[in-house]
Image (tube, rainbow, N blue to C red; front, side):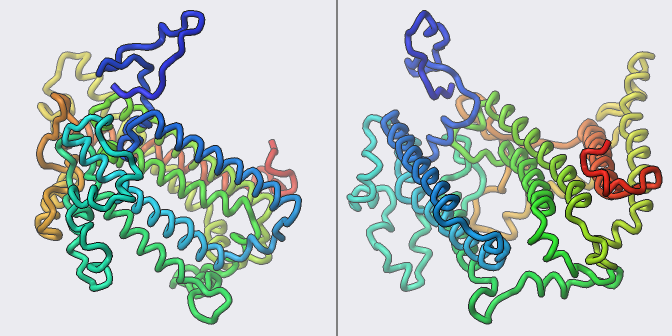
Length: 463
């Protein structure tokens, strides 16, 4: 079992320490940190100690930077509205160089250490992390292409590096996590992508895109003035920006929740069931809160920052003008979904109570197979053979493939869909549509309604 800390023997509290295996006494954790550290190549408490001191130093630096940029040289508000420059820096600096640095760490430190750990070598006998950097002989024994240095890179003979930048697919049979060489390859590819993207927007030179021009040119046949005025809204209203960012962040968090179990990214995380459950629940809750926050801040924007005079006949104005149609459609959709999803469960309960199990909706009685979802899963199972013939397996065994078991525990197996999945997914459709109805109605009627026409003068706190 994973453990991260030991409770010291003070006033009998050491009773909290349990046997977590391997002759180690400590507290069992379900946060996934143990697996994350294993994937990063951290094998001892000393390395954690060094990491913590590094974090402490960076935090102190940031505290100083915060003080400096507030009391000594505070940026002007206009500086935050220079979005092209911001996009270039965030894409190239934050994401591009961030991915590059992480890929570098994975290739030079994490990969060799994990390869030795997977081979069953004890952490005490593995060389220290910096030795893989200073002693090239050491890493050449594990990955022979290191002996060629950077010559293959500059001669465009990149396939030489295929021993540590792989495209295998599937899971490592020793740890039940994604292949670390696959994820290193992934981060290196992302770094290249983001570093190129960081040169996409026009700043001091007359080359590149302008956000305002892109938005104003984006007109459809049914959207009137299109996105005219959107640039001004997003650069001048914090609430509008926050609403969009929260909606994106929340949606991404929910996507992450599903990817964490379908493609377990860290060693041994797939067989650590409490951690898997905790991480899924955590990311779903965070996603839900963020999306609800997006609705709230969109409404605050409508009350405080929206100017009807500046938004005539653009997409936002046109949405607000046919808000009655939108809300009434959502209304009947929610009622329809409510009856037709929950109704199936009530039917099943009634039939079970009457002892008529042959009349229930289930795989053994009346079947409701999710045929479209099964078709999609089948496509994804067969895809790697057609689109990337060199890969060993599909991206996730959830769609089909073999059972991956680690130490007599199932790490990942095909999740075949049936009647129960069809029914519960329609319940999810129902709950999500109700959430959309609540948030969208609150946003569209934030300024006024027939009952309270002057809502916008009363402020967001009303009633």
